[in-house]
Image 1 (spheres, rainbow, N blue to C red):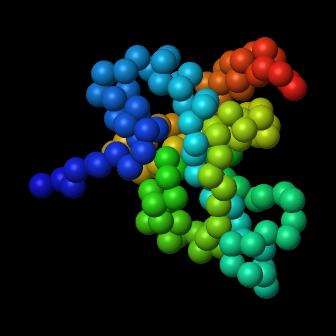
Image 2: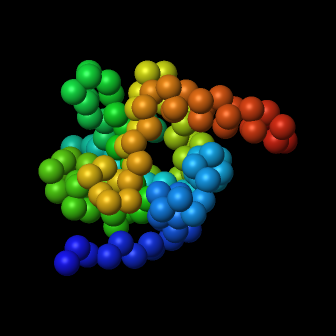
Length: 145
């Protein structure tokens, strides 16, 4: 018997609903922009674990079989634990809005949320670009943008 996926937060509930066809995928993508997501970052050597001296986080990116850089993200820090055992240098991370991450990544980057899990999503570079444009358009109407 396959283990049951228990949603730990609102984003996971929405992801499950979208993958089961109970939530429109476009609605999910728009809601994803405002959702908190966990981005593993590389720890600096010889530092207190989890404390970053630099202001530049080095997120976990992998190269797929097509040579595309894929930014690895998770719906929660707990979901990252098993995957990150293969990447021990990435024991820290940031919990932030997905739109904040989109505002800081370059073009041509794919995104994988909960890679290898039953409830995960892979976004190709074109979809990521569309989400960046959507996020930018939404932010233009906000004060201080």
